[in-house]
Length: 199
Image 1: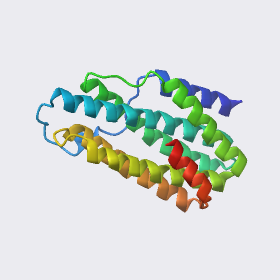
Image 2 (image 1 turned 90 degrees about the vertical axis):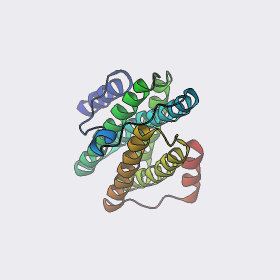
Image 3 (image 1 turned 30 degrees about the vertical axis):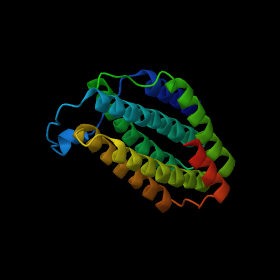
Image 4 (image 1 turned 60 degrees about the horizontal axis):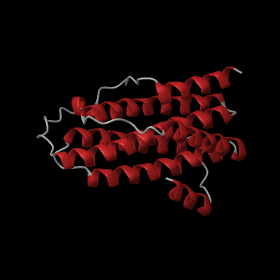
């Protein structure tokens, strides 16, 4: 029951609460210079990309929460919780950047959360902990590639968004490495293809 209540609390906080990062926003931490003013078209492009990134972080919270709920190993559950806390930083950073760009997160976030939670729970429940970890590895690899594509598309003048995405990409790589070290199994090709299609 405690774990169910924790999962419910995580869902409500992810979708409806204002998020506070534990780490400084990357553009401050890296002392990125103040960017040149963006044109309206550059703002629109950056906003669209950062909204997608924010949705991705909502889904990451849901995946980790679903996997943690299904997890049988308390040590592994703690590692998933730690990765989830880092993803909360990403939520805060992307939400703040959207605000700075005079835009907002997706209104469909509750639906994205529900779908991702179901996938994460199913991965942990049906496959066991090692398969669940393999799912983390494959997801984070695809997210890393996804973030790199955003780095390629973000306006060159938008150093603030680029700094945030770069740190997110580094964190996702670390999460994949954590899962590998914890005993992840390689997922079948069909599952990888499904993850790539659903991303």
